[in-house]
Amino acid sequence: MFLYKAIVFLPLIGAMIAGLFGRAIGAKASEYVTCGLMIVAAVLSWYVFLTVGMGISKAGRSRSRSCAGSSPAASTFPGRCASTRSPPSC
Image (cartoon, rainbow, N blue to C red; front, top):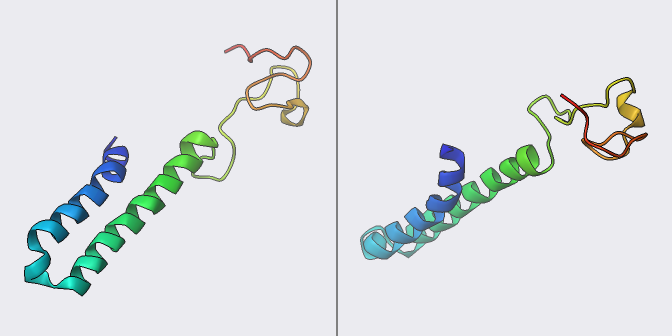
């Protein structure tokens, strides 16, 4: 859950730092802070997209289950059996 909150709040924190302390830290430092936190949020969002949206786990394999009685190659869609076109039973 912390990861999702960080994606939302890191750009906001960068904007607050630049807005409140921009004159004190300077224009270049404000650019570095805002752009740096925006890049971190973008990288984290790609990680979340790949793990949640695409179903890629840390090992690099899909997290979808294969159909009972058939090979994973027989499944045409993640989470669906090729023969019945219904979700696999647990």
